[in-house]
Amino acid sequence: MGVFRRNPHWRRLYLARTISLFGDWFNALAIIHLLGNGERAPALALAVVFVLKQLPVFLLGPLAGVVADRAHRKKILITCDLLAALTVLGFLLTSKGNLLPIYALTAMQISLAAFAEPARQALTPTLVGMDDLLEANALSSATWSLMFTLGSAMGALVLALVGWRAAIMIDAITYLLSAGILAGLPFNLTRAPKRLHAKAKGILSLLGWNDIREGLRFIRNHQDVRRIILVKFGWGSMGAISLFLTLLGTEKAFRIQGSADLGVGFLWMCRGLGTGIGPFIARWYAGDNPDQLQKTLTFAFFAAPLLYLVVALSPTPWMAGTFVFLAHLGGSTLWVISTVLLQRIVPEHVRGRTFAAELGLVMLSSATSQIVYSLLLDKVGLSLRTTIFLAATLCLIPATLWFFSRKRLATQAA
Image (cartoon, rainbow, N blue to C red; front, side, top):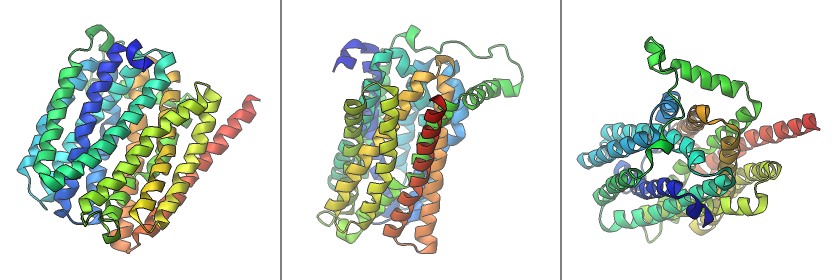
C-alpha cells in the first residue's frame, strides 16, 4: 500500500505493534484457560481480569500522557516492551485457579501498555503525513483485528494441542521482537516536541501535575475535542463484549468439537474479522471529507449495538458469529474515525495527554461495564442473553446523544 511506501518510519512502528498484538491474544486466551481450568470460569473472575486489562490505563493515563509529551517516545516504547516481556514470563510461575498472581501480573502488563499507547498514538501523526493519516489509522485498526483473529484462532489451537505455557512463551518473544524493530526508529523524529515545565519545582510539578492541568484545560476549552472523546467513552459502555463472548463460547451449544477454547476462539475471531474490515469500508465510503466522516460515525454508532441485540437472540454459534462480525464492522468504524478526527485537530504538544485522557475514559467506561454486568450475571442471576440485550440497549443512549449534539452544532453553524 502507498502509506507503507511513503512512510518508512511509520512502517517500522506499525510492524512492531503488529507482532506484539499477535502474541497478546495468545496471552489473553491462556489467562482465561488458567482461570477456569479449560471450563467456564465464574463471570466475576473473568470480569476482574478484563477490568485489570483496562483500569490501569484509566488510573495511569494522565501520567502516561505527560510522559509521552515529555520523554523520548522511542525510549518509552522500547522500555515498555522489554519490561512487558519479563512480566509475561511471570505467568509461567503461576498455577491454574491461583487467582491473585494472575491478577497482579495482568495489572502489571497493562500498566506498561498504558504508557506505551499514548506515545504510539502521539507519534503516528509525526511519522505520516496528514494525507495518509486516515489510511494509516484504518490499516492499524484492521491489523489489530487481523491479529485478534489470527491470535484467537491460533491461540485456541495452541492451547488445545500444546498447552497454555507455550502461548505465554510466544507472547514474551513477540515483545522482544517488537523492541528490536523499534530500535531502528530515528532519534530526531521520535523525541517529544519540547520538554514541558522542565524548570518547575515541587513534587506536584515533578509528577507532571502542571502538564496534566494544561492538557485538561485544552480539552475543556475545545468543544469538538470533548465531543469526539465522548464517542469512544460511549462505546466503552459495551466494554463487557469480551466477557459476553467468552461466556457465550463456553456454553454447551456453542462449543466447537466439544471444546470451550475453540468456541471462545471462534467468536473472538468473528469479532476480529469485523473489526478488520470495517475501517476500509468506512474509508471507501467517507473518504477524507470531515462531514462525511462524522455521518459515517453516526451510522456506525447506532448499527453496532443494534446488531448485538440480534447476537443476544442467536441460537447457534454460527448465527451469533455472523452478527458479531457485522456489529464490529460498526464498532471499528466509529473507533477509527474518532481517532482520525482527533489526530487532525489536536496540536502535537498536547497530543499525548489528549489521547491518554481519551483512552483513560474509555477504559473507565469499559471496566465499569465489566463489573456491573458480571455482578448482574453472578449475583442477581440475570441470564447471559438478557444481559447482552440490556448492554446493547443502554449503548444506544450515548449514540443518541452524539446524534443530537452533532445536529445541534450543524444548526448553529448554518
